[in-house]
Image (cartoon, rainbow, N blue to C red; front, top):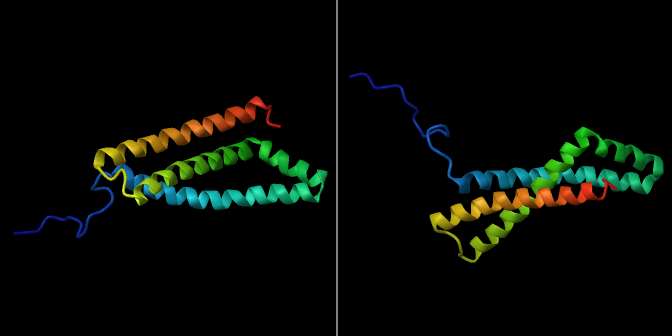
Length: 130
């Protein structure tokens, strides 16, 4: 009797990713994004220390559409990493391990990161980007 062709081990497309697993992976990715985004912040500070011309160049890049997209993504990475880090602190003390609590806290992390990012950028635009 011929054997059906199937994978020897489970593959990522076979199973639905639980929210906790997806958020864990995104947490690691945002940590990397934060580290890379800090290079932009360091460049801005060095340009500021170097003089008005250098700072004007750096500010022009950050004020461009590409710079704004990068800064927006970096802001979301920071807020997501913060919210998920707080969630992990609760887990470290043994709270929130039930399936319902883990799912609710995962949704809360997503909502909190989006709301905090929106609030931060609302403040930026309310100040006129100064």
